[in-house]
Each structure stands twice: as structure tokens, then as C-alpha cells.
Amino acid sequence: MEPNTTGPDVAGAVLPAGSSVEPRTTGLAMAHSKVISPTHAQASSRMSSASRLLATVVASMIPVLAMAQDKAKPDLAAGQQIASSVCVACHGTDGNSPASANPSIAGQHPEYLAKQLRDFKSIDGAEPARPSALMAGFAAALSDEDIRNVSAYYASQKLTPTAAREKDLAELGQKIYRGGIAAKGVPACAACHGPTGAGIPVQYPQLSGQHAEYTATQLTAFRQGDRTNNLQMSQIAAQMSDVEIRAVSDYIAGLR
Ligand code: HEC
Ligand code: HEC
Image 1 (tube, rainbow, N blue to C red):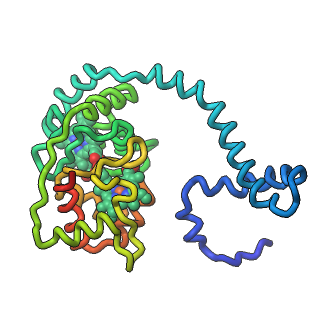
Image 2 (image 1 turned 135 degrees about the vertical axis):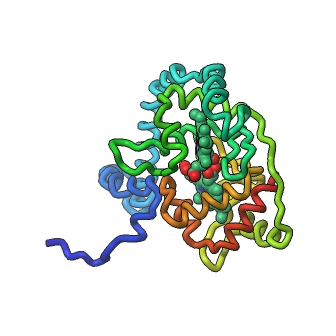
Image 3 (image 1 turned 90 degrees about the horizontal axis):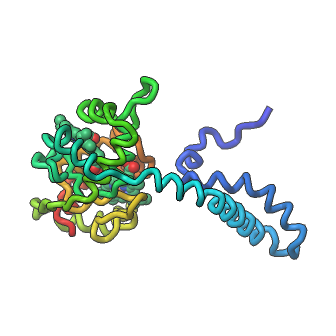
């Protein structure tokens, strides 16, 4: 019987996916360390065999990716057709939503939009990673190809940004966005979403110019565990008070 010395491994559960590489490459590192000087070999060979492994994996993926990308060339006209016939009522034909409860999606990174549309779908009857009574049905009706096309179409549109409104909270909002909340270990939003809120394509969504009401709803949903499609955001929002959420959401609305 293995003694359970650590109990429930909370810290382990929050490690980024890449950290699982370590135990698997240790075996490789040991094998390689025989041919390198034994003193510094351990650390450096672990690094190098890990990066060698990564390089091999990446190299073997390149032809596959190139093919997939070729096939996946989005059809903007088909995307616009879906937008103007189905999504228009809530997101506008150009992705600028007139109502502050609905997100503006114009100019958002297409990969992020596509991920959300997949996350709204229920797979095998399970609760979706991003439950939404409204979006579930619309997302369910979209094929993978529809998702690619409509995401590319909305991404190609120009965002009409909103404005910050709560002067009293502006300073707090800016502080959180730029510097996080040190006392609670909340990182700066800017670290991932960028100093102007433009995000980083594929990885981090654009936030700037979004309706404050929508942003606050999402942060609250992450905090309550209603939106569970990103661990980092769940952990960040879990530490935030209502006032902090309101302040940073308002700041983001006016961010350029
Ligand atoms: C009846 C209104 C309505 C319609 C129609 C609608 N949406 Fe939505 N959409 C919403 C609401 C509300 C949300 C926020 C959901 C939540 O609570 O998380 C949303 C969220 C989204 C998001 C996530 C945006 C983000 O920033 O994370 C995407 C992407 C999206 N919708 C795309 C679409 C597409 C594509 C269509 C058409 C096929 C569509 N929507 C039709 C109301 C609607
Ligand atoms: C470690 C990186 C990281 C940090 C720091 C971070 N975020 Fe995020 N954020 C993400 C990722 C990744 C997503 C996309 C989640 C997904 O795939 O659904 C996201 C999504 C969001 C969304 C949802 C956007 C939408 O359109 O629905 C909001 C709102 C948000 N973040 C606000 C914040 C705020 C406010 C802060 C600072 C308090 C912050 N984030 C800090 C990584 C980060």
C-alpha cells in the first residue's frame, strides 16, 4: 500500500498542463546523462532532452498542421450568412451587440470565438463547460465548419468600443488591471490580456471595449463555478469581491 502523505493534491490540480512533462522526461534525462559530464548533467540534460522531445513532437506535427490549415480556410461569406440570419438579433450583423448583457464579438480572435462556441455545446448529454441557456441551442445547430466560418467572419469585423462610466471606481479598476491584487495573489489582467486589452491571438481573448455588464457577469460566473472552461480565470475570479469585479469591468469597457 502506498502511504498517502500529501492528502488531496490541490496544488497539483492547478499546475499548467505542461508540468506533467517533467515525470515523463525524467527517464529520458537519466538515459542521456550517461554521455554528459555527471556533475551538471542532471539539470541540463533534463532540460535538453525535454526540449529535444518537444522539438521532435513539434516537427512531426508541422505537416499535419499545414494540411489542417489548408482545409480549414474559412469562408467569410458563409459566415456572414449565418451571422445575418441567426446571430444578428443579439450580436448585431457586425458583431457589435446593442444590449450590454450580450457580448460584442467584433474583432475578437477567431480561435477564442470558436472555442466558446464549442464550449457552449453539450457533449454526450453532459453539462457544457460554458453553460448558457441562450447560446446552447444556437451553438448546437452549428457544424465545425459553420463555427470556423462564423468565427472568422465576426473576427474580421470592427469593434465599436464602449466607455467607462463609474468615475469613483476608475482608479481601483486600473490598479487591478495593471497590477492585480497583491494581497490576494491575483495577477495583473494585463499580464495575459495585454496592456491595452487586445489579448494575444489563440491564447488570450481581447477584453477592451466590451460592455461592462457582460464582463462582470462572466467574472461572477467564473467565481461561482458556473463557467468552468478555464481554470486560470476561475482561480482569479474566485479571489475577487463584487466591487473589484465591478471596478475592473468598468475600466475594461473604456480601455483602448
Ligand atoms: C438570443 C440572443 C443570442 C443569439 C441569437 C446569439 N447569441 Fe451568442 N451570446 C448571447 C449571450 C447572452 C451570450 C453570453 C452567454 C453567457 O452568459 O455566457 C453570448 C455569447 C456568445 C459568444 C461568447 C463571446 C465571448 O466573448 O466569450 C459567442 C462566440 C457567441 N455568443 C456567438 C454567437 C453566434 C455565432 C450566434 C449565431 C449563430 C449567436 N451567438 C447567437 C446571446 C445570443
Ligand atoms: C494567466 C492568464 C490570465 C490572467 C492573468 C487573466 N486572464 Fe482573463 N482569461 C484568460 C484566458 C485564457 C481566457 C479565455 C478563457 C476561455 O478559453 O474561455 C480569459 C478570459 C477572460 C474573460 C472572458 C472574456 C469573454 O469574452 O467572455 C474575462 C472577462 C477575463 N478573462 C477577465 C480577466 C480579468 C479582469 C483579469 C484580471 C483580474 C484576468 N482576466 C486575468 C487568461 C487570463
